[in-house]
Image 1 (cartoon, one colour):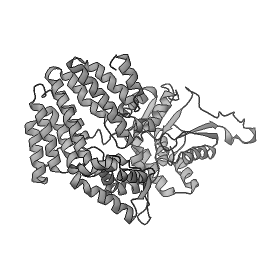
Image 2 (cartoon, rainbow, N blue to C red; image 1 turned 180 degrees about the vertical axis):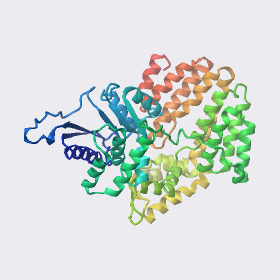
Image 3 (cartoon, rainbow, N blue to C red; image 1 turned 90 degrees about the vertical axis):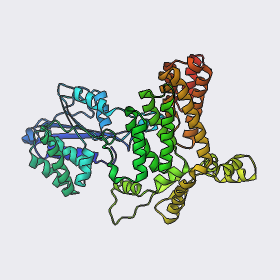
Image 4 (cartoon, helix red, strand yellow; image 1 turned 45 degrees about the vertical axis):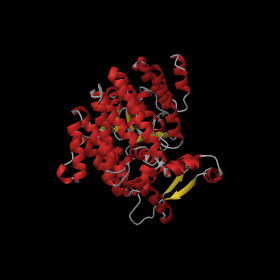
Length: 492
């Protein structure tokens, strides 16, 4: 992909072959910006170039053919999946080397629901499709060695023994390049070592999402946090405690311990209702209630954009050196409604009404603005807005979300009394309410459409029907597929 040194890697392989008696040819086909602009590089090597003038020159192909590829190198797991899907990886002949880290595609990130492709499924299919499958987190190895992923792939390629060249010949190729030789050799050695240490099979991937979470040491926490964790473990069933504890963490970070206590009050209230102690209903409610209570308002956006950890992450992503200046520009386009919702509720409601002040503020929101958080003025602007979280409970948005959340919990409790399966589907409808700006407005409209169906149908709505409606709403943010589904189910 873009910026990972794919062209350098292809050139290394060509140079490796040509310097050691092989005919070599490479072609490349730039792709669209699914991530940062993926490009397919194709290299063919054929022996006999060292035979002198009598050597017969082969006719080399310009593009790979399915079922006719010996080695596939993929710098990201989804790219490995694409190669498998296109038939370039076959169990009869192909060695597949792939990094297990993920760089999510536009389609995955823009989905209203969880659009991510299951990494475990990709690994499973890749392992079945290839004659030999080598996988580990090559992005981490590149960062560890101070190089780029192409050098790690080059080392992993040597480690598999798929090409008939020695380590000295591989390393001499890097040295002939003359640019970034030392870090490239470190990355090469690390890639080679990772493959050989596992007998050429590679290392199973680990991700932050899949890493087990260890329980916090109570002695190291503040009394308020200890009290919240104790409440979660004493007031909620065991099956819901792990998600509730994650919810507490999230809401303390979002607001404060008192807000996390409100979260537990709501969970305990549901658990005390008839049918509300259903384990699956409580788990899903714990998950989605924490997400809803940490809604993305302008205060939250400003807070996330001014955190020190974000600046460190951006510096790491662009590989900025300690003595380099980094400029970060935020492209912001707050709507009038978002400005009103950030104000104290009475002021926000007044400004929403059509009058001179409404028209004046609306004039300044027609075009977005660029805020440089790396400048003092831009940083202080967002920092001041982020500090307004102390007044979040007085804002119009807080009042609106509180009303919506309470209504949602009432619907879950009402359904749980007679139909826990329907209550579970109602709880999961929160997935529609996310983001901010137009994304939030469209998702909320779809959510309200589904809740109106639940209200009209009372307890007769089949859980599978609500699940289908929710799937249609998640598939199309504009609501066209949801409307089609409603008409098909005769629910309009």
